[in-house]
Image 1 (tube, one colour):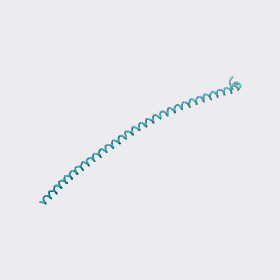
Image 2: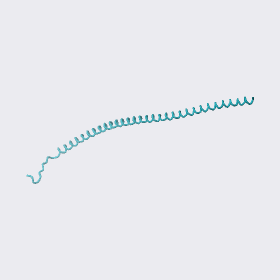
Image 3: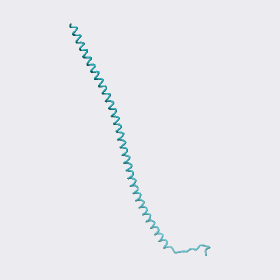
Image 4: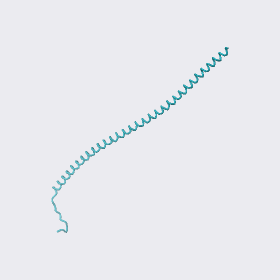
Length: 123
């Protein structure tokens, strides 16, 4: 009798422990599956982030190039203005010098006697 009750208790404990083991194994599998899903999800999110970063870098690069072209255009316009101003100043200076040289030659020619030279052999 006592042996029977004891073996029944042991069998009941074994059954209970096996049930707990199966439950824990199921939970373990579920956790592993959830972990695998989370790893996959993280990998996809990382790829999405890398993609978004590339897009953002591309946009920033385009903005940088646009700004660079804009600044180069402004620089070229300012450079052209400076060149035009310099050319105008140089032309006015040269015109003034031309007038001065013409005036100087005119003064020199006024001071020279008016001489007509005949060439030999000419009658």
